[in-house]
Length: 247
Image (cartoon, rainbow, N blue to C red; front, top):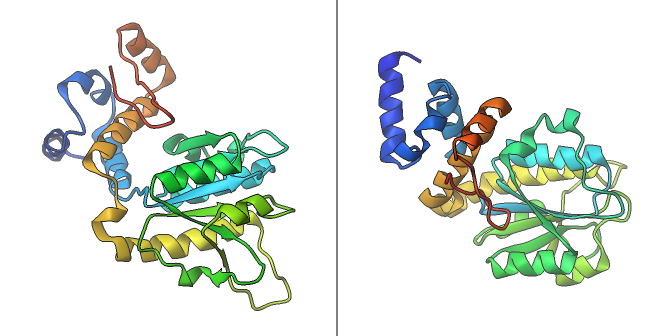
């Protein structure tokens, strides 16, 4: 990026409130082209669609869901731990999870109740009766997609608490997808349709963009530089799993 272009872009970030004088020690250490890439991704991020995984135990599957969510611009992933700890495989995530906001919930009842309180409808991936194709999901309101355990699927409690169920139609002898494949196919469909249907509601608010951009700037720094800034009094606060602001 040429100097004139970089200067113009930084001014744009200032006008949008994404960089300020208080955060100058941070953003001055980041190349303008890196700031632009984060800005481009930020403007495609959404909380209109979110993901809830319940008792997904395999580290590869955990990682694949996170990587898929990040790839489709879904910012939040809600997690209920199963029999195995939540420890996504780093070789699979390729650190995609560092750009996400992860919400750990104690149980599926709490997770679904919290989502509904925030205005989400919750639909579970399920192969049983009275389920609808994913392409028929009504996306007129914020929607959470629920995926269950690799072997036992979505629990009975989750099915009872969810607003409905969906299935990805299949036409071969195989009648189920691996959870990572199911998440990818479902998220591709719903994010594409929701982006068109929800319009501006699909994207983050200016306030959400600001806190998220500050978080991304902070974590993109070399750990050694972060430590130096912390020693100078800079830190980033987190509140309830949400990105925080520089203090």
